[in-house]
Length: 191
Length: 191
DNA sequence: TCCGGAATCTAGACAATGACTAGATTGGCG
DNA sequence: CGCCAATCTAGTCATTGTCTAGATTCCGGA
Image 1: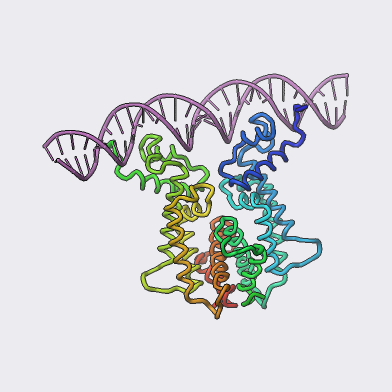
Image 2: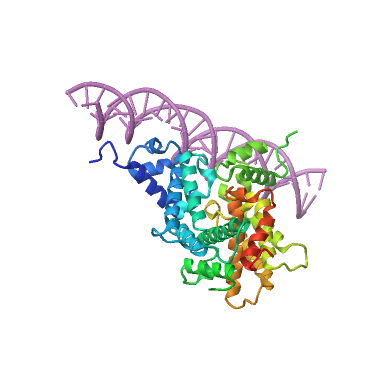
C-alpha cells in the first residue's frame, strides 16, 4: 500500500493539471490541489516542476511537441497549406489544455531553454510544410501566406473554444468548417 | 487631505488594473495591490465590483463597448469586410488589456446580464458591417465569410500580441500587415 | 437647514495558496 | 553491502480573496 515513492508523480500531476485546465482553464489551478489528487504531500509536485510556472512550462513544451507531431502527420506526406491549417485546428481542439497554456506566456517561464527548443522545432515544421503554395506566390509573400493561414487557424480555434462560433456550426465537424473557411479565403470558393 | 471618500475609486481601480494587465497579463493581478495603489483599504474595491471576477467582468463589458465603437467608426460610414477586420485588429492592439480579458471567460462572470447585453450590441455591429460583401457570396456563405474575417483578425491580433509575428513585421504598422494578409486571402492578391 | 437612510470606506479575521526549509525515506549503482 | 542522490514529508511564512461589523460621508426630502 501507498509506498513512499509514487512511481510516476510527474506524469500524474501533469495529467491531472491537463484535465483541470481543459475543464476550467488555468486560472483556478492549484499546486496543493494537484498534490491532493495524486495522494502526496503538498510540496511534492514542486520537486518535479520547481514552480507553478514550471509546471505550466512543462505543459507548454509538451504542447509544442504534440503540435509538431500533428503538423508532421504520417511520415512522408507533404500537406498543402490549407491541410496544415486543418491539422492546427484539430490539435487545438483535441488538446485544449496544451493549446491554451502554450499561448499564455505570462503563465510560464517564457525563456526556458527546453521551451525555446520545442518551439523552434514546431516552427521548422510549419516552414517545411510551406513547400507547396497555392498560386504562384513567391518572395516575401510566402511569409505573408504562412502568417495568413496561421492567423486564420489560430483565430478560428480560439473563437471556437470560446463558444463564439458554435451557433454557426450546427452539427458540422469544426475541422470541416475550417476547411470551408480556408477554401473561401484562399481559393475564392468552397473548393 | 485624503478625504474618507476617494472620489472615483471605481475608475481608478479599473485604470490601474488595465495598466497592470496590459503589462503583465491578468494572472498576477491582485485586489489588494490595486487597493494599495489607489490608497484605500484592502477591501474597498470589492464594494464596487463585488468580486475579483466582478472587476474583470466590468473590464470585459467596457471592452465590448470600446470594440463596438471602434467597429462602428465615424457616424454614417459603411466599411467593407476587410476594413472591419482592420478595425478589429486596431482595437486589439490599442486596448490590449480589454482584449485579453474579453476572451478569457474563465476569469469573469460569463453570464452577467450587462456582459450579455454588451456582447449582443457588438455582434449586431459586426453583422451590420457585413452589408457589403466582396464577390457575390450570399446565403450561408455570408456567415462563413464573416467567420473567416473574424478568425483572421482575431488570430492575427492574438499572435501579434504574443510576439509570434514580430520578426516578420520589420517596422511596418501591424494594421497594414493585416491589410496585406486580408487582401491576400480574400481578393487573391495584395490589392 | 437638518436629518436619516444609503453609499462608501475601514479594520479585523479566516481559510487557502505558493514558496521555502530541514529532515525522513527509498532506490540504484559501484 | 554501503552510500549518494532522488524523492517525498512536515512545518512555516507572507500573501491573497472574501466575509463581517462598524465607522464616515454624501445626498435628497421634510
